[in-house]
Image (cartoon, rainbow, N blue to C red; front, side, top):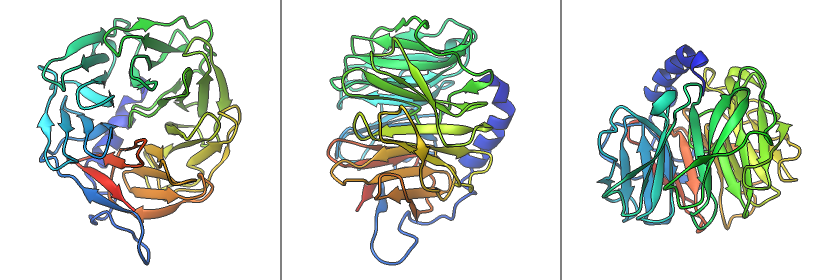
Length: 355
């Protein structure tokens, strides 16, 4: 997220952190009858957790605005503070974990504030694996392919193109990829570091990244980040709006959500979907507000969950139609291969979804 929108972003972040946008419900369904419900997993902190990886039913990692990193290995009953040392002034916006031991966290910001730390012992020790040295760069998100050895991270445009770095050793070292295969960004186009899901991977070499600002688009690579194509989403572009989060069920079916975070209750045209791997995006159903995170639910065909500061929505039609089921504020949602969905957000909020 670029510094030219810092004033707007800071004002919006203050509103979202205050939880004044949604009623203080227990996260249950707002309509009649039984439905999905968030079950709180208290962390005992007040930190805002935008970074989330719900590895399994028992293991999850969250990363926060004040340099915090927490890990649970018992389904959220207890949490361990496993943050890298001396990172209290960094804002972690993404965590990507393979299991209870191996994880990487990404901090955002201009210059050297954009960093990646990696652990392979559950956070007992960390390697500072990447430090940004380009003043114009601002890293937003990262993602790994299955197995956890290969991954990508993305920065807002540098010299007119989104910047991609790659790892082949589980996040312990990173290198900048050539931008020759990256389409030029529109002036004023950038990514949103809202939930760590503006960049996602699929298959063995596919990845997608999302943008907003002056253009609301989705980029797609089939060769692990070396060359990219780009398509327009149906989510409107705006100075504080566009595509915030992506999720793909397979290499063909994807969903995008977003909106404008300065109008958090407006969910009109805030979702888009693709049935051909992101070559073309069509309109999805309206959401009940701006949404910063989205995830397909494994084992429940057509089911997608989206979260944001005014609540959560669920679709059982692959993103064609959405229903609000909770007013609890979250920033990120992650559903693992076992169909277990975790969410995280402001004031230390972490929860798991019950159907």
